Each structure stands twice: as structure tokens, then as C-alpha cells.
Length: 633
Ligand SMILES: *Cc1c(COP(=O)(O)O)cnc(C)c1O
Image (cartoon, rainbow, N blue to C red):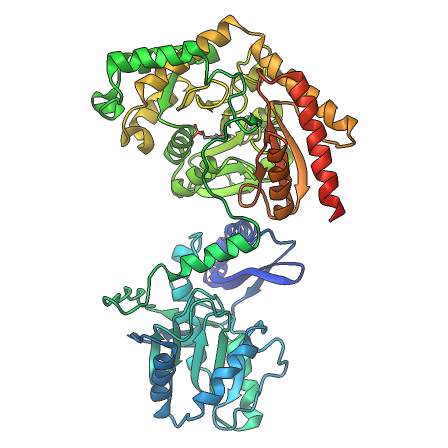
């Protein structure tokens, strides 16, 4: 093993979709770190914010005989305008006799389409790359400290730029580098050379300008260009002592407006049909957009319970639960929830979002692993991120993939697998028996989110375990804000898990206790559900009826819960169909990116036990009419 230990490998990841670059990364690490790093890079590629790749290339090569270089020193030139920025570039490079900056600037329009950098003769401006489309790509380099932070999931663009600039500055014949990001919002660029170090220039272009790339300036004989390119592309370099990123200078009044970028992003959002705004719930429309599946939110019994609790205990609970915020309605509700779900204990947060974020982030931490279904609710996703555990996203409802990911990641100090019981956008349900079996076999804590299952699934609305006749997962999480008609989030679990969460869940500890009115209303809802076990079947019956009505109009969809998705695809089209339905008196939301993937917009019809059958028929007809009208354009 001794020989293995000293050997280093370059691990490169590139992800693309339909040939377009999405993300890339390279690290140089010892042999032992290669397999886990490859997994982390694959994970990063799969979950990149720029979209899902259809091609991921992970390449592992020996990084032979690394050359260790000390990082270039870093300094910053504060400028107000791109003109000033380029004047600074001109001054900095003038000392090396590079004088044709004004002719170099327009060349950045061409580097934009290139995968690598442009290699220019510093004096004649002749282009020297063998393949002008590809350019010269600096690879085989890393921060020498990389092994220590190989698993960091956060990309450090600044450190990567310093590493690259250091390597390039040491290539034979290179007298300077100019770099401008092709990110339209990133206006800071740099000039680098062995003599100058790495000089950040705070403004090289106007915000919104997509021009950008790198230009390497070469001076020397033509027959040595190959050596230079070879050094940049193939020579293994480890850069030591990369300095920390200098803080933004932020001199008062220097940048025209720090929020300038926001307005432009908003314009883009509007242009692609993704604009959203809050609006008061429209009166006089038939609502198919609420999660109030049993019609309990407006029930006089819940309203009376809330009013009474508020009259008795106050409009707010006055403090966090562990201080003096725990009131009789909280105790009663937690007992009731545990009894309803058949667990030892239960715990309530102010919202379901807080319950998920506070539970996931408490259960796992750095070095642990969390496995999350790709269609899980945002609050689970945020809990995963906040936990700092390694996050493994498994394919939707694919238990083989979950098993494989657990096997690849483990063993760890702690592993948690989490999934929605009923998936919120399509209303499909988790394969709970196999989920539990997979968690048990892999040694992972199991957690399901019953936000859309409680009060809907199972003969008496007790959720997915009742539906399948399955055992309980370790953690049953849910919300009081959907079928239960109130607000709040909960976890039903063993005493140990609940005690742990009371001691470790930051959103439980550091936030004011659940509103006493909401607690009392949820308690009343549980009592109604217990007295009327037929309610959950009623709402599922409405959903089935609606699916059948759509089928009569030739629209195929399916559901097992109270949610019926009507696929549309294009974002703008979905928004227009929703507007047409509103004209017809129905309020049905168009669900668009980022809630669902781009190009997978849909109508999401949420049923209530109180909907009238003839309204369902009328809505199905209106949906068919709107879809047909849209197709004609
Ligand atoms: C609505 C929802 C939540 C969040 O619950 P709130 O009480 O609205 O904060 C969490 N998970 C899922 C699956 C949800 O649909």
C-alpha cells in the first residue's frame, strides 16, 4: 500500500446536455480518495442548478510527477467602469511591452463560444491554438491542499481561478493572461503574470454582457508553442498557499447599484413565462388549488377551537417551546397526534417546512449521508443542504437506486433516507414497503413526509402505513396545514427520536412556539377525522371521479391520492390555460419551474371532499376546451 499512498490521480468531471456544457470540475487526490470523490462529483453533476445533464464524463488519470508552485500573490484594482478597468489592464501589461490591448478586447466576443482559452502572440496578435474552436484548456492542476477538502460540495471559483492563473503564468513563453468571466452577472476579471501576480479588476464589462473567456499571451519562437500548450494542458501542477479571497472593498457609492442584477434577472423570468406574484385568493371562483382536502379549514368546529384557545392562551405563544412557550394546546395536540399515528411520542413545529428543515438537519451532519428522492419537497431539500451531510439524490421512487446509493456511500456514522409519502406535484405515492425494507437492509434511518397523506391515504386517513398495512418508518413527518385544515408541522416517532429532536432541532429550539389557536384547531381536526373515518375515502373518490371525467374528454392522467396532475409541458402555455380556466370560473394553478423541471409544466388539480360532482364534470370539460384551444395556436 505504501506505493499507492504516494500516487496522485487527476479526477475530472464534465457534464453536458445535448452537447451544451453544464458543469465541470477537476481535483488531484491520492488513490484512496478517488472512489468517493468520483461519487461526489457525479452527484454534483446530477444536481447542478443549470439543469440535468444527459452526459457525464468522469475521467481518472494518473497525475504523474506533480510540479509544486507557490500561488501568485493576489491584489485588487478598484475601478468604476469597464473603460477604467481596461485602462488598468493596459497600464499593467505595458511594462512587458504589450501594447495592443484595444485590439484584444473585441476578441473576447470570440472566446465566448470556445471551450478553452485563446492563445495569442503578444506582439502580432496571431492566434496560435491548433484548434481555434476548442482553444487551449488548462487541466491537471489543483490547490495542493485539495485532498483535505476534496469532498466539499461547494465550488470555490476564486481558488480555482488562482490555481489556473498560477499554472498558466509559469508556462514557458507566457507573458500574461487576461480573464473575464462569461457569466453575465460577474463583472470582475483579472490580469495575471509571474511579474504582476494575480490582479483582480473589479469591473471589466457591464452587467448583463455575456462576453467572456480567457486569453493567454505568448512571446517566443513558433516552434516552442507546442511545449507551452503541452505544459498548460498536460503538466501536473499543485499550487501551494492559495491566499484566501480578498473581501469585497465596497467603497461607498462605487458600484452604481448593488441590486442592479436583480432587475435584469426579473426581466428574464418574465420573458420565459416564469413570473410569479402573490395575489389575494380570488372570490367567486371554484377553488381547485387548496390542500384543504377535507374542507376542514373553514369548518366551524376548527374555527371555534382556535378562537377559544386564543381567547384563553393569547394571540401568540410568547416564547419558544423550551422557554415558556409550551401551552396546554401543544401538549394536548402532541399526545393526540402520537395516539392517532400510533407512535410513542410526537413533536410540533410552527410549520411543516420548519419541521422538515429542523428534523433532517438535526439527524445528520458532516460526514453522514442523506438519501433523498429526486422529487422530494423543497423543505426536505433545504434540510439536506443545511445538514452539511453528503446528499445522495435517488431516482424518483426507485428503490433499487436507493439500495445502490446506500451501498456505495456506506458505512457511515449515520445514514438517513427520506421521501414524500404522497409526492406533492403528481400525487403519486411512495413504494413504502420496499422503502422500509431497503432502509432496514442498508442501515439507514427511514423518514417519510406525510403532508399529502395524512387525512387522505389509508382507510381512516392515518396515512401511507395504513394504506399499505406496512410498519412505521422511524420518522413520520407531516403537516397540520393540509387535510387537517390548520397550520403547523409535526414528527411522530419513538420517544428517543422526539427527545433527540427537542434537544437538537434548531427550528424547534430557536423559534417561537406554534400558535395556540392553530394547535387547538388541529386537535379538533383530528377529533373530526376520528369520528368520520369516511372522509379520506370521500376525497379520494372525488379524485378518481375527476380522472374518469378527464378520460371521457380524451385526457389521460392518473392518481392514487387527492392530487390530479394534468401535464401541459410549456410554461407559457400552462399559464395561459390556467388563465382560460379562470375565465370559466375555476381556479387551478399552473405549476412551473422551479417547482417542477423546465418544460414539464402542468396543471395541478387538488380535490376536496366538499367538491360537488357536477363541478368536477364541468372542470374536466373546461380543461379539455382550454387544451384544445391552445393547440390551435
Ligand atoms: C406543504 C408541504 C410541506 C410544508 O408544510 P407547511 O406546513 O406548508 O410548511 C412539507 N412537505 C410537503 C411534501 C409538503 O407538501
